[in-house]
Every structure is written in C-alpha cells, then in structure tokens.
Amino acid sequence: MNRHPARPLAGLPEAHNHLASRRQFLVDSAQRVATGLSLAAGLTTSGLLDASALAAEPGKGHIDAHVHVWTPDLEKYPLATGFARSDMQPASFTPEELFAHSKPNGVDRIVLIQMSYYRFDNRYMTDTMARFPGVFSGVAVVDEQAGDLAETLRKLSAQGVRGLRIHPAETPADRWASSPGMLSLWALAADHNMAVCPLINPEALGEIDKLCRRFPKTRVVIDHFARIGVDGQIRDAQLDALCGLAKHPQTHVKTSAFYALGKKRPPYTDLGPMIRRVRDAFGAERLMWASDCPFQVDPGHNYADSIALIRDRLDFLSPAEREQMLRLTAERVYFS
Image (cartoon, rainbow, N blue to C red; front, side, top):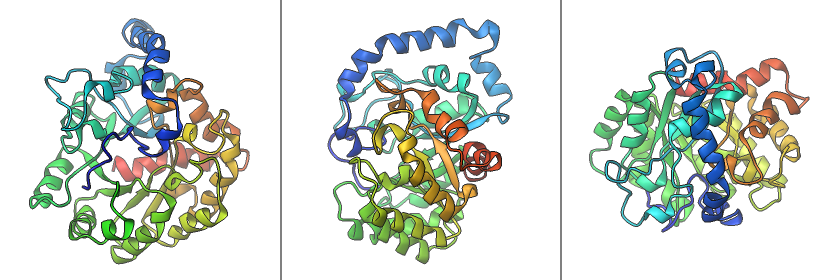
C-alpha cells in the first residue's frame, strides 16, 4: 500500500487536521479512560462488560464496522518507522477500553481497522482477533507493491481478515488507482473473499468507479461517506458521485465518523439528508453503521450518540433498515 502521510491521524488523516489535537484528547480523556478500565475490570460481576462472556456468545447484538485499537506495549508491538509514542493519541486504546464504550450500547461484534501506527504489521489486530474468538473481524493494511501479495492475503484470510484498507496518501488518485500493485490487490481480494475498503476524498470517487467496473466481483466498502462533509459542507455533486457507485452491486458504504462530518456536533441529525440519499441509492442492505472509535469519543462526543443516530433518531429508517445498518450488512461482509 502507498505510504501514509508523515503523521497520519488514524482513520481520517486529513479530516483530523480539522479536529482537536490528539494531545488535547489525551489530557481531556484521561479520566474517561480510567473510568472505562475500571468498568471493564470492576463491573464484570453484573455481566455488563465481561469480556469473556462477550467472547463466548457474540452475534446477538449490533456490529460496529470500524474501530481502531492499539497498545502502549511497544516492546511487543513496535511502531512503524516514522512514528513515535507521542503520535499515539490517546496513548492506549485496547479491546478492554473499547468494550467499556461498546458493550453498554448493545454492540457485541466489531470490525477492527489496522491502525496506521503499525503500517503493514497487522499483528496487534490479528492477535486481538485471536484473543476474542467470534467478536472481531479485521481489515488489514498491506503493501500492494510487494511480490508476495498473494501469499500475504492467503495468510491474513486464514486469520479471519475480511478486508483490505487502501488510501492514496499523497499520490494523485489516477496514478494510485491504476498502479500494477493496486490492480493486483483488487483482483486478489475477490479470490480471498476480502472487501477493498477505500479511505478517500470525494475527488477519488471517479477512480473507484473505474476499478469497480474493471473488477465487478470485488466487494467494496467506502469508508466514512468518502469524507463528504469533512469541511462542513455536504455538496450535492459529491453525493451524486458517491451514489453513482450504487450501480455496482458489490459496493457498500459506511455511515460513520459522524463526529468529523457536517456540523460535527451531536446529535448529528444534520447528516440525516446525506444518509437518506445513500439509503435511497444503495438500499439499507448495502449500508453499515460504524463509530470510528476511539475518535468518536473525543471531547464533546460519545459512543451512544453515534449509534443512536441510526438506531433512534432518523425517522425515515424503518426497523428493518436499522437492523440492516446496525448488524446484517456488516455481518454479511465481514463475518461470513
């Protein structure tokens, strides 16, 4: 995969430049993280956040289709070249810290997205998946230029990885999308039952359309509405381009990262018209909700408000459509 910018800020490298700094997040959230750890460790007698119980019988609740986890244990899981401990904001977001947010909101399965701090070393993600059987699926980051790409995907698939995150970084979208490595990745993804998950700006949607036409069997999941609205403006032309991908039956969209889009304020109902447009174009069976934690729990935001937008607050969604977006779509794509 093309290299990320020098200091990507997790799931939305450019979008997060418009948000509070991670250092501020670390300071402001220290108490919340401590509380989350206390909950995860101390409330298990009630069964509320018992990680062993969560691992034992997942599959009855909602699915969060986009979460990043990482650990402060840099000896066992070193950061990739170019990253330092100070880049990790917050300093820790382990599965146990995640459960303190997700389990009280009825989420019992989660799709992990490889964190850019580790670049192509997916071990922390796959080790986490192995620790909690059935709870996690995974989306890996790989070097599509590497000569052993087919073998890499075979191994990742055997570990339960069901997606590959791609991102053009500083490369022009047309050159990135047409590179031999990218074309190989799209072809191999279909062979290994993996979704290609583009993290892109709206300007790259045309290139994704070309790739969808070239590789019609490859499953695609567009992250975070293709970042439409990250500058506060939701433009009809950009939505038209996103919704135009609905003509490709294998293409899906994550309704996610609400904290970073539009007005960037809960209850996020200003995003309702955009969600309605993509619902009308794709159908709820090709949409999936995701939090983009830990960034959804930045100061001023919380996990409950994110899931509530889909579960409770958009009256144009039927109960069946909510079920598709909160569980069934992600289940088909990432847990089948």
